[in-house]
Image (cartoon, rainbow, N blue to C red; front, side, top):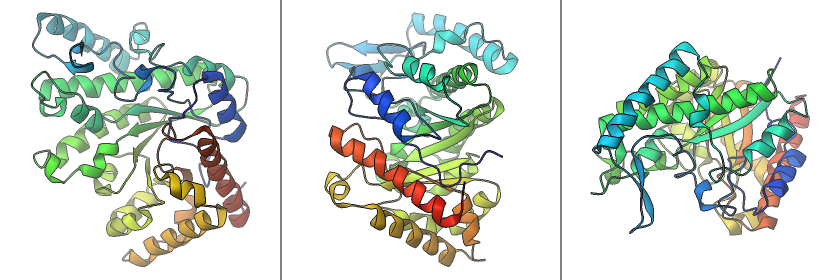
Length: 362
């Protein structure tokens, strides 16, 4: 039986300028859940806010300000919009993949995916970790020429949701072609979720975020994947639970006890086979990463589990939390030096091995 219990993977980005060296590191360290890396050091188009624009109607490049915008008013947009929705219905509704490659992630938007898939098909892996940017983060990062976020435009928000869904399905399809028995674990990267509820997004409705995440999550599950949301901070975790995701991934080094405020929701989530992916290795704090070691990370994890048990009304079974946990770094490693990135990748695997031995997990 396949299980994620106490395994290790990573969030996505690495500092490498050589895609092959990045892939070699990943498959050397992550024997159970290898991931494909974002390598913005290879090309700026691999930045997560840009990486998924291929095939999405209405995204244009503003040469004056050197950034991508959305334009939902042009004749060209409306011409492409009809074709886009027809493709979506055929691919998602009818599972007709003849136009799916229109929504691929290819060079220069990814240098590593072809290398990853080639390496992945050579081994026996139960899981493949993939990723897209989350709809809330993308919808609040991508603006029109007036500076209005796409998430506030109902029509364009729907375009982004469906576009990201197609990006996720394309990845699932590629993984299944490489290894039909592997389960794609699709992370939605939602760093802006840590700001939900603040004055910056006071007018954003909780229901709109839930609906956006749920639409993508439901399709990922329907196509044979598991859906995770990564937020490198603390947030209203009930949003992700209500969206029906399988996995919650967060910065457990700095905010390990943030789950305790949602203990009732977390208990329901875990009992429905939800997983916590503890982002326990501090990639967002270089000084902390330089100083940390395996005993400290183990202690942090055990203390966080104890805190969640203590704060739950009915005392969540500690063994349930352990069985529904696995590990990642706190966020991507793209901003680190090569040495620190290697340390982060090594530490998360060492912690996984240590705790699997401690709790008798194969």
